[in-house]
Image (cartoon, rainbow, N blue to C red):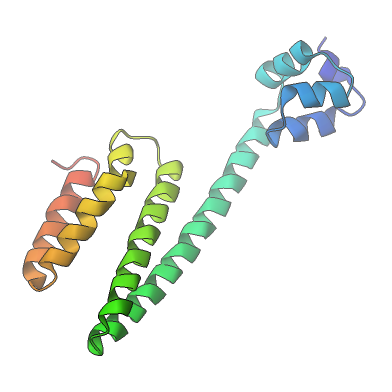
Length: 161
């Protein structure tokens, strides 16, 4: 029988494994062999505990995305106000901030996605620059901007193309 499963502090070992603590640290703390802890992790760790941790991580990341989107809306509001008074310094700073927010949001969403190959393209710095440049260049022509955005969205939507 598994020495970790028989260990009096098995629940604590499981929690540490799920929390991502290094196997060598767990083995030393609970006076177990690294091989036993590793084997227990691979073969006996309750899958329900692992799934619960993944769900918890997903909810936490989702909350971060929601907070970032709220911040994004605020930045867009600042940008709109700066355009009304034609404050080019604030406009440029707001655009820079928006670029950073978009990149961060793409990274967060990419970590939550199912790992489709196009995720790497969507979060690449090059794509962020291209997308931002297109948005800026086409801004005077809203219809062209919308058409370009729709075409790009169709390329990145699963099942499209």
